[in-house]
Image 1 (tube, one colour):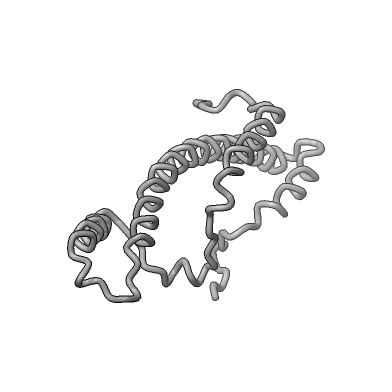
Image 2 (image 1 turned 30 degrees about the horizontal axis):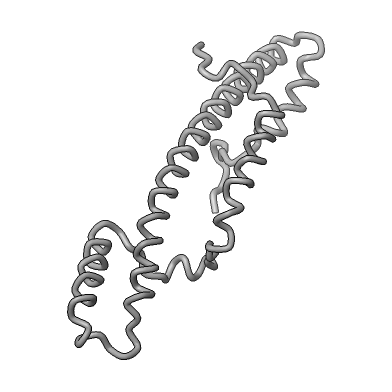
Length: 157
C-alpha cells in the first residue's frame, strides 16, 4: 500500500499561511466587488476571444470618438479592461495554489479513507469469526458506513 501523504502539516504552519493570506488580500479588498450567486450566473463573462474584442474596441473607440455614444465612457472601459487583465494573472496564480492544496487534501482524504476501510473490513471479519470485542466495534462502525450506498433490494427514490 502506497502512502503519498505521510507527514502532518503543522497546525501553526496552516495558521501562519491563513494569516498571510488574509494580509495579502487586504490591500485588494477595497477594489473587490463580490457578486451574488444569481449575478455570477447571469453576468457577461470575458474569455480570450471576448478579451480580444474588448481590446480592439478600446483601440478603435480611442481613434474614432465620433462613433462613441454620449453615454459611452472610454475611460471606464479602459479601467475595466486593465483590471480584468491584471486580475486574470492573480486568478491564475490562486487557481494553481488552490489546485495544489485540493490535490493534497484529496490524497490525504483518500489515504485516510482507505486506511479506514482496511480497519473496518478487518473488524468485520473479526466479528464474523466471533473474536471477543469485535462485534461491538463492528456495530459502532457499521452505523457510520450507512452513507449513500444503497444495499441490494433497497428502494431508490
